[in-house]
Amino acid sequence: MIDILHKRRAGILLHITSLPGNDGNGDLGIEAYNFVDFLHSIGASVWQTLPLNWPHGDGSPYQCLSAHAGNPALINLDDLVKKGWLTSSERCTECGGTAAFSKNCLMTKAYYGFLLHAEAREKERFAKFCTDKQNWLDDFALFMALRDEFGKQCWNQWPEAYKKRKAQVLDEAKRRLSLEMAAIKFEQFVFFTQWHALRNYASQKGVRLFGDIPIFVSYDSADVWVTPEVFKLDENLEMSVVAGVPPDYFSATGQRWGNPHYDWVYLEKTGFQWWLDRMKTQVEMFDIVRIDHFRGLEAAWEIPATEPTAMNGEWVKAPGKALLTALCNAFGPIALVAEDLGIITDEVEALRDEFDLPGMKILQFAFGGDHDNPYLPGNIDKNSVVYTGTHDNDTTLGWYQTIGDGEKAYIYEYLGQPTTAMPFTLVQAALASVANLAVIPMQDVLELGSEHRMNTPGTTEGNWRWRFNWDQLTENQVHRLAHAIDLFGRCVSQ
Image (cartoon, rainbow, N blue to C red):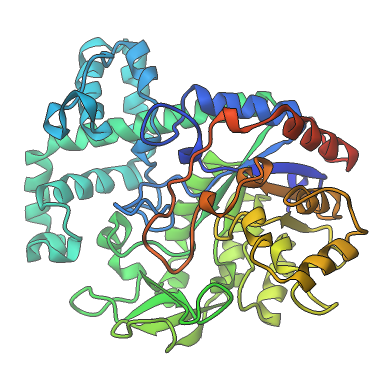
């Protein structure tokens, strides 16, 4: 672990889609820069987001069309208007007229505007981007162009020759869809250009960007279509087992995610090259990267594809030590965080500790058990990231309103009978803890209830849509949080 995670820091958890703005979701425009300024003003030096990859229709950033490609919904269109590649009056009439527009449609228009009006140096940067990202970008652009052509069906429903990637039909498709592919590449060029501009600005303000890499990828993704040998698929390229977790705190029947499992034997033979390529994209984007479902690198829950829930499955070992060694050898010291929540064994903890990775401590989990509860503030160690709650939890105020009187009394007694009300009681406890990094969800900064929850695991409706606006943030909240960050020694310049 590098020094970035050895210093006492404070951060805020807020996905880009949750930023304010006039569009359907937050983006990489001025409000993202305003949020960096806000973090800098209160002494917070870390901004944690959820994965930024291109999601499916449900919006989940943990089920995406690519392990590399950025979500075009995060692109700020005002920037393209300023460059002269798009006009402010343009709307996609095919997608609902002037009252509603499709960002995808507008990005296609922006590509043609780019071809007509971009300066030579911008076109050179685009060409360089396409060359630098060629190892994933070419296949992704073809995948998305074909997906549009085949009515957005999963690739296993495409005609057999396309499903099995027969060279002749793919070569013909590349010629037929060359313009569509170029527009998709341009979209990625714009996303990454805007992201790196934001990252540079954040760095100037002393704010580090903290990303999130889902351990698994979606079956309906360019990754599985292009490299089926990396995954446990049958001769028809269908999944025989799927990923998830058994029954736990979040769900009585477990969580059946439906992702394909890795063929670790193949990956080891290839020196984990697929994973190295994937991590390269992440370390170029972020200063810190959380490995979601870290325990799956030690053993993963394999569920027969025919099972409707995650209750029936088995733990299957994974070569986590060999993979992490390969990552360290390839990238040197990188700031990784292990999402070690759920059913954690001694073997998982040993793997985390062998590579000196900080784990996660959730204070909402701390007060419902005994004195050995690992989430109690007194049991947290320095090499940890402490949270009041995460994107998968209720807001702290919502959580507090549902627990029993005994647990409420225990919280205040344990914390020394503080006079502050929830959720700041728990926010202050996180900041006061010995954990090197304390991260507070923005909902808890704003003191919001359950209706502002980001995600409820095991459900598919109503998630990933939460947004805030600056009017919700009071001067008292800002002053109180900034004071606590300073009081507990979490202000750092770099």
